[in-house]
Image (cartoon, rainbow, N blue to C red):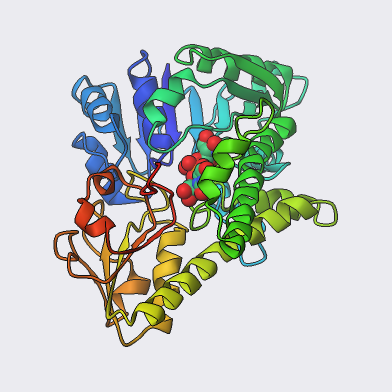
Length: 412
Ligand code: SAJ
């Protein structure tokens, strides 16, 4: 069968590669010509362990190719971004653009799967959009001859472990009809070793949002504890480690805030679905969003107390061992510090990128350096616990340290 994967980003490209290694002929579709070109050369335009070898192999065997418009296919998998708009509702324009591109290709009988994280009701909006462009087809009508089958199957893989989790995670599949659920379920069963959990489309949409909101609330609790511990001068990591010995307590790790394109975004879709009721979810988001400001405050205090003239910030990505700077709290910390301490040198070490993001490139006192070049800096701020930083010498650790990841504690 031919599968078209629309959107060759962090989710679409790994999914395309896995499908291609499991016997499907896969056509990846992306509006960005440089992504299309990279994939056709067997290259991956971002950092993700084991992905490039899989893409290169699938392209070399002729199982995967990329192009800018959807082909004729049996299955369409939509994996495009759903960013949020200013009012924190979801921007569905990429999904609707994908629907508009797919609609002319449909003949009836196809399976259309939405993988993008979406607010409740989006799968139905996608299906409505398809049949409004193609009134000759229907997604829930009685005539099987003109049926298209539409389902939501949210991706739940962890960046950094995508190639493993795509295969091993349990998978939620929710169709707009029982037939759509069954067809989508059969597709994922080909490569997914986890359980396939069948439900309806709206419950599937909500399940994904709830998983990420759960993690956000738990991290917000850890971050609130870190603020309390700062006031009381107690080591928050030691405290959490002790509390987590209780068989029913499992607190996540505090840090400089919550970033990325999932956990920092998706809870807002729940809030905007029921603003009056989603009080805890909203508060957790606000606690996590306030963290970069608190970290910057600590840095400013340390610089003033020690009369430092150079500060080094270790890490810019939104979490360890990836190159993704989207919604990164580390970037926000550096922005805050740079705007408040214009008279000192701010060095940034981020081994996974070769240029500063535009918001920092404009700051005259901020530069991207190697950790060796930052050896003379007075204050060291660990923002991201990249593997490279664990091996930094005792020399850098003996300086004035603000360790936001608990990686360099004496007992860590
Ligand atoms: N973080 C903490 N403390 C922790 C764990 C994470 O501060 O204890 C921070 C990280 O540093 C990062 C942010 O949270 O800034 C998010 O990182 P993450 O590793 O928790 O999650 P993501 O955004 O990379 O991936 C999440 C995953 N969701 C869950 O674990 C419930 C992943 O499975 C989803 O597929 C992904 O969102 C997604 O695409 O929605």
